[in-house]
Length: 284
Image (tube, rainbow, N blue to C red; front, side, top):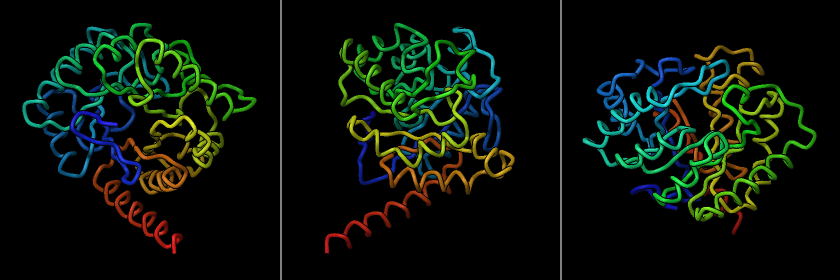
């Protein structure tokens, strides 16, 4: 799969850097970047630190966040996309659930859509993605609205329900002309009212979703389930986040969405080296 100039490979971990331009995002690594110039400067730093992709978000999806009106999200996101494009051709992903935000950002040079609702919050989203022939990441979120995305749920068969959700999402994509070659899957760690223990279970069972033959993206960076399990504040969750990447990589994930780019890049590079060496030794 190609995302802009970048080619996804199963042999190398892909680092998707988070660039939040919403003032209420749950974590900022460094300065808040709500102004386009500051956001662009940070994007260039993220590139220097080893980011392969940059995921731009203008609406926080943290628990307790309020939805953002269309015009406000456009005012946050579009100037940032334009500013980055003046300086770099790094692939840009748009973290949005709104089709119009995706459409305008793609027209300004974005290369991918990361929709936490998998196209369910806005019925036009998949058509926009199909018409632009760009990749989309489908996140497991069994909710019908922004307001209910973090409501606690009881799952009878968690992995089975995620698989069924993916099957339906893929079918909806295929119906509008999005091929599996342009689809990434995210099991929705921290979304859909999953308990901390359920999030851990997903990480250890990611191989169950490899049958869909779509790249797997994981977003665990500093999330609250880590804090609940280890009693850690947000600022002290980096090492635990890296541990989740390790188990996720070994179970099939290849794209990692992260706030802390430099240490994550070093960690993933070493992890890839070890996994490659282990595979070579097993051939002997």
